[in-house]
Image (cartoon, rainbow over all chains, first blue to last red; front, side, top):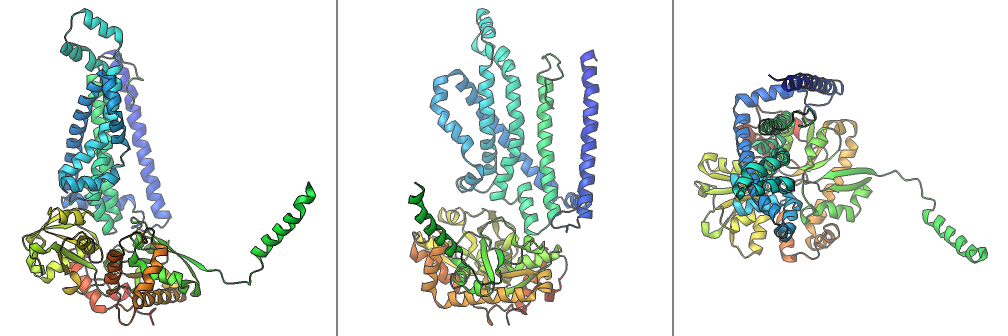
Length: 267
Length: 324
């Protein structure tokens, strides 16, 4: 292990420790609040009640079953949204005229309140998984698109000149220069996209669904089972964090060629 | 310069002081915020009529309706944040199951207003006809799901005998586009909307097959214990509103125009039909009385669905004490 990685590891460890410590403190405060405040369980369940409900939901399979559905929607939505946005972003980065022509629609794709459009998507595409995947893809589209355009345009002109002077084909320029130069910004967009996709899936499920974590929240609310609401919400948070972590891991792998400065990757 | 403004200034201050005036010391009105669980609609006519005719003011209340769809009236009343809310009967039992100390104090609807609607060409006239069909439902929770399960039970059917599509509140579009063969709806809403679009429909009301505790006024144990007079006055004022609205639909409709935005521009025939269909449900006898059998039936449905673990003490869930 080289000197730089050794330093990185030692700085990372206290980060994990402090994160764990703050989490423990938060749990303690929560337990104290629900106990001292004499707050009824249907308003704010104690951490113990939520844990017990979590175990029950795990045991009867409802948590895993619904989490799998939401995860599928998120991954499918991410794949669709990212691939469409990246593909279009590359084209638009090359052509300012095309970008100007399409910019009203692009901005609209972000401005349309997903909550309002979700029922329409359900009517057009049915109440199944497709509408949820589309909602996810829509919510992910704009940030990834913008990041792709910015990333592609941030490729230094002198490096482009260098590739041209070496007689590189368009594909070679793309493969050996553009991707690598745009990757940091692109992956930044993916980080945002990953967490937004979880929101998108839940919004879709809230409006009309018979499975998924958003559906589980609705069922829990209908039964005044606040502990289950917490379980579902915390599972969604864990899912979003997990996806975010995966993107960070991807960044570490793909951007390993960058200078090992500590401030490079924001955790 | 100053003299020019002197007299107008005197006059102005005289007018100002006479406006504020000296009021006789009156008991301040109790502010009540009432969640009704839906957007402003002619269905809430009793409240509009009672407000317009001053029934609530006479009873000592300043009423404000809360139309937020997301407000959980049951939770807020259970938590003691609000004194009253308008909810459907099953919410009381589901809430009490989780420890919410809510009590149903006045029955507004005698029967459950949920129904299954289908295009006439589907030929669905009885619950038994629903077997094997694809049915759209807002979701697998709430009054529509519970009402639908009661309907299936009445026909001896299981949920597995039908295909349920959770379609949110897109039933009208789903029926019109034949995406589903039938849909679970609110009887005073979607069927009327479909007919107004020229689509002939059949309606299978849950009320024809199951007698269940439906929409009414809830309060909490604390308010009953500490201020029963408040509950009695509020229930009485509301019952007056229901009675007046029920007996004078035309005048009621005109009053609704003041409280329901854009009603004046809406299709009068459709909206009047909504009002008349709703009024048909406000026939509790005696007015406001809860029927013990309706509550037993509701508990039975919830137990069968597994939403209640064990029978509750129903005598604590509702009361007819305040309608007398």
